[in-house]
Amino acid sequence: MENATAVSSERLTLHGKAFRPYMAAKTIAERVAELGQQIARDYAHVEPVMVVVLKGSVVFAADLARAVSLPMEMEFVRLSSYSGTQSTGVVKALQPLADELCEGRHLLVVEDIVDTGTTLSKFLPDLKARGAASVKLAALLSKPDARLHEVEIDYLGFEIPNDFVVGYGLDYDELGRNLPGIWVAE
Ligand code: IMP
Figure 1 (cartoon, helix red, strand yellow):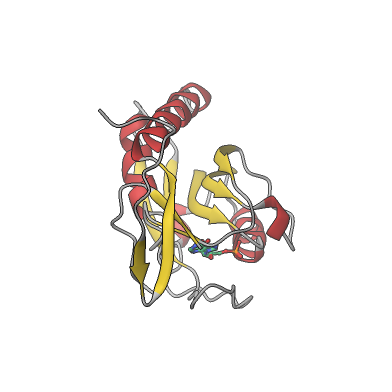
Figure 2: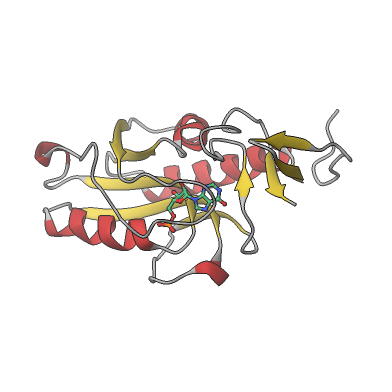
């Protein structure tokens, strides 16, 4: 049985960069279950559209969606490229949300991590401007010390320090997404 808080002394290397265990899969699963229950309570009377920000959020969104016991659509957007360990600061809508999925709908945006806030500080107001009935944000992780642009997070998994992490959907140049837990760069 995996311990919720203890991490092993394992190390892993991705593209030559060393990472150590940071957060166990069980810890994440317990928090995601809590967030799912909270979301189900808050959206009991409306049918939300879960807007999954590709690619990093896909693992979190898959678990979160199944923890929300409500009818809910799932849509996918691709916003920006993020290369290496530094945010580019450039937000590109590579795969946008269609107008009919925006206008009058209750949107629950799902993001893996809010770092500088650059991506969401542009994307969330855009959804409101396009006529969404409501826009809320669920984020697994937040690095408040890295914030350059303010972003309101309605459903937050964990606050973490300003360190680079991988796993549970988060990547280091495309590696590490399939790790069940979260690992931090050494
Ligand atoms: P932001 O616009 O700076 O808030 O960050 C946008 C995106 O950068 C996130 O959705 C992640 O895909 C990526 N990102 C930020 N921090 C990390 C990290 O520590 N590991 C992996 N990806 C990250």
